[in-house]
Length: 142
Image 1 (cartoon, rainbow, N blue to C red):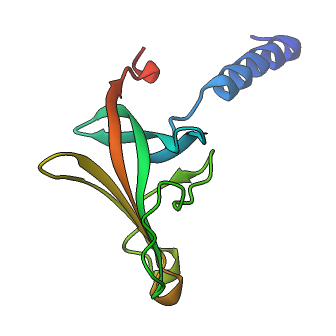
Image 2: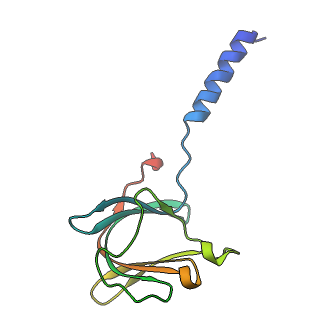
Image 3: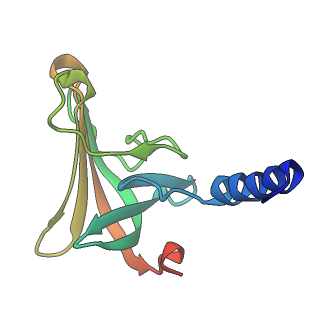
């Protein structure tokens, strides 16, 4: 049989190893940087589909911003993202104020990322031109 001290040591090692396991971040869009000189946002999109995790680095420039019924603002400094935020798509919420929709669209000359959140007079729509799109290696595969 095991001694109480041996069991305690085994339990400590087990708990330590479980505590060191890092859960993968949920799928979504993480704002990782803003370059004010270039008016460029850097966002990492993480997606798991077909059992494979994909990470994509997007460099964005604000194209337009609109709040509720206010006038449209077409200015590279108009968009408002918070560095560090993780935006997770949530379109089927029971509270429309908490809805968040993000989609990529391709045009004839460029690709865009559109972020729409909220509802009614507090609805915020932001559109970005994607100036760089790069697939990143996912370190959690190793």
